[in-house]
Amino acid sequence: MTSTKLDRLFREIVHANLCEGCGACAYFCPDNCIRINFQAKSGLFNAELSKRNPGGCSDCGTCLQVCPALTKKYSKPRLPGTHEIDQVFDWFIEPHKHVYLGYASDRQRRYQCASGGLATSILTELVVSKQVDGIVMISPDPNQPIRHRIDLVQAPNNILNNRGSVYCHVDFSGVWPLIERHEGKLALMGLPCQLSAVKQVMRVRNLDAARLFKIGLFCGGTSSNKAMDYLCRRKNIDPDLVTAIRYRSGGWPGRKITAWVAKENDGGNDQPVVLLDRSASILQSGLYSFCFSGSHYPDFCKVCADQTATSADISLGDAWLPEISSNDNLGTNIIISRTDRGEKLLKEMHAAGIVEIQEATVAAVIRSQGDSLVGRKLGRWGRHIRKRSELDKEAAFFKDIIPQHFPGTWKCIERRMLQKLAEIKYQGFAFFCFMVYRVGVTLMMRAVHTALKSVTKGRT
Ligand SMILES: Cc1cc2nc3c(=O)[nH]c(=O)nc-3n(C[C@H](O)[C@H](O)[C@H](O)COP(=O)(O)OP(=O)(O)OC[C@H]3O[C@@H](n4cnc5c(N)ncnc54)[C@H](O)[C@@H]3O)c2cc1C
Image (cartoon, rainbow, N blue to C red; front, side):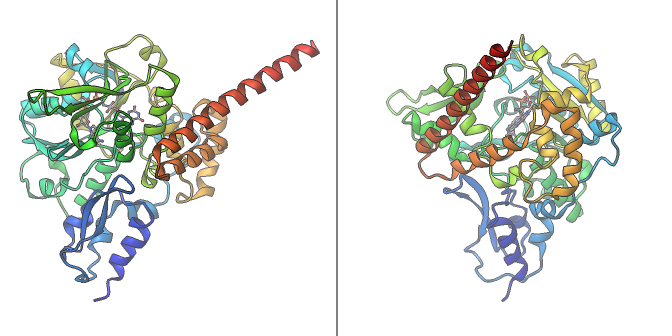
């Protein structure tokens, strides 16, 4: 049987490294032609041809209809349509009711969670107040806890156990049976790409979107699992022996990555090992950047324009604002309420003393995200897909009005160049090249700075 549609999916998405691994194609394919599998070479969960029904594709096209990556590939960027400053700032974060800064009132929860503990507090409240039957969220894969997959969680304790950010690619494919078969109300916790995949599939499959309350995380990019495996190997740890992992620990901003490793001769006790401590040295902070700040982002992350989870009811990020982060060790969220029910829930939780929130501005959201939000929205990290000319007009405008948040041409070239390092088989060598480049650039900038200073001194 010829399968032109399946061929197209693999040619345009999977083999072009744009597969987000959401698993919608695999779950909804009536012929069982596709499956999601962990790809050791890329460190990502991606679609591949299933061995269960080789050549059995009936060419129905369901895979193309549900694929969020294909939709993104051909969607035109939505432009602000005005240069009225308030409106273009709104365009950066898309539909919203209000923007807040806030945190969980419970100080311990606030300290333990990724930023301010808002996500864990909201999910717990939704379950405790019986607004939903359960939470569709990631949790460690019991067979290999260093990786994460989707689960239905109902006990508040388990919601708390699943707190924190997971910066490596997760297996999201378990979401579809939970959403399709569960008849009651659920909440979904996820990244922007995960939420938009769910939104698209619910629309295409005529599923009732109103019964899903969506909490989204801001996302500057998710890394390949090769990054975490490399950190383990640097400490001579077999990734398969890791029993738990915390990507951020030690209070906000959470500069340590800690793994718990099974010790066979220790009465079953797992031993915590700090895989990385960003504040320890320049080398360690470079190692963090190498693993989690671009080099290991998959291609689908580079072309994603959605940093703030625009399809969520409530979106949550870190309040990376100097006036807050300079004297806060517990954590603060930046919060966008996008729908009436999202706004209502936040207000109720505030009134009940579960969370502290105070109104903030859209400009604060943009400021809190460095150049990442602006770079994504203007397609500057992966322009090969977005329409260059249309976005360039906007880029020129923003370069003038918010130069501090505008990723310049050199930054874009550098980012794409450093991304090539993740493809090198020997990650130790790749990290060496990364540090040589980093230190080289720093020394060169210093030399240019000193030379310029002495020239101006000579003149005066
Ligand atoms: C890959 C990634 C990139 C991010 N990039 C940015 C950024 O650029 N700027 C910014 O401000 N914030 C970013 N965040 C969000 C930030 O790290 C915090 O997660 C967010 O501020 C919520 O904090 P919290 O204390 O409310 O979360 P918590 O109360 O600790 O709860 C976090 C919840 O998110 C869930 N979760 C964690 N990781 C994932 C994942 N990979 N997929 C699905 N669900 C997950 C957890 O299960 C948990 O329920 C990113 C998060 C991730 C996972």
